[in-house]
Length: 621
Ligand SMILES: [Zn+2]
Image (tube, rainbow, N blue to C red; front, side):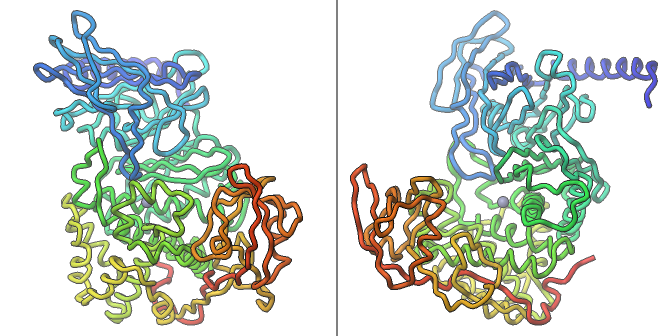
């Protein structure tokens, strides 16, 4: 309880702090003020005060991409107004390119003011309406060219109006006068830090927990009736596990999980002391709900993934990312190591902490193997090529993606697993990938040394004392399949490949009943619309052989009208080898083709624990 007198003295001391910070900011070189000026129109207004601009011309630019998501997004396209002034009045400016503003003919302090349109509910951008605000610095803060290394002071204010008095702020950005979860003054040591602490503002649910003496917060927007205490308890277990693996939590004042829960959606983005997450509000466990649902298991895996990145990519980094060049693409062949290894450990950690069973973990691993085996693109692109071309291929996937590319997440995770098992086996269980991760942290992440393009391989060989040249040659630079089944068998796990039991079979589950009745495969993915459309046509599959293409609109099979909901049932009435007549529209012209159905291939993986996993999957206390 707080007495009225205390409130008065609290607010007195608070206003003194604010005053002191305003004086400090008035002396600072770079000060940002960010105001959600128009939640209804989704507009933030940012005022940047620059005390010592360059002599003749001052350039300001906004990043083209956000670290962690390797695609040019051109955040400058959301800057909807721009003005500049000095102590005397308005200052002339022009744009140099798509993302750079240039001010000229000013004296003294230069002040720019711009509005940012924020209406993208994703972890990569900014979002503002009357219910909440969320932003990444890359979407809202312009960099001051040539002064990126200077401290940045930030004043955050709530929207104007009675309805916003209850809004709070959640961020891992250092407070510089602002009270915990309040608007006010914040500070970053440089621009790189400024854009690495996303901010949530509004009426979010909040759960606090402590990990290794460091306060951790979970701030949730958009979900009611979830069991936040249970979630926090489970997150703490995951965090402690990752900290034990690396040996320590990197130095930070606090860590924040920012979670947005719309009706649907899924994704996460890592930051140095926080992560942004999106999941469906239905994914979270309700109060008194027991057990781990598939959705909650996926959510825990997502949190585990982003927290693992606190070391692996936020601090252990490709040398090419030190520093980040934010105006254009930065290529590295190493993304498989940062996303693949993280994808391997995110689910493994759930098993090692006992949050899920060994069987549940093997189901997830089998689904990863299934995903890999279903793409013929794995024979065309290596995982290092996939990493390098992430910007234009993995992040810009078209209908031909399964035939032309391999995911550095999926194949990277399988490589990480194969590497871990190889190390464990060849060293008689004395070493594992854990040892490699610890050395990467101690020798690279902690001192801030980047990992050079082919250095990862030599680090692994040095840590383990093994000659892994041929393993890496095949796994990283080749397109042959990884010999995962033999490795798994050494650890008491049998890998079974079987045909998918349905179009939605993701793998991981054993076939119920007999598999005598072979299902027919048309070799294409079809939308569930009333008028089903071909989404993808798989290499050498029945549809491709017959001449069907993505975009074709299916009308009838053997003269009978079909819709998306009934497509699978209709297809299941046929057997492999039978030929069906497919009627479809292409470019609004009615066409017909004979399609000879194939048998569903044995590329759906099921893993069965048949023996001792030798400490690989043991629960660690
Ligand atoms: Zn990741």
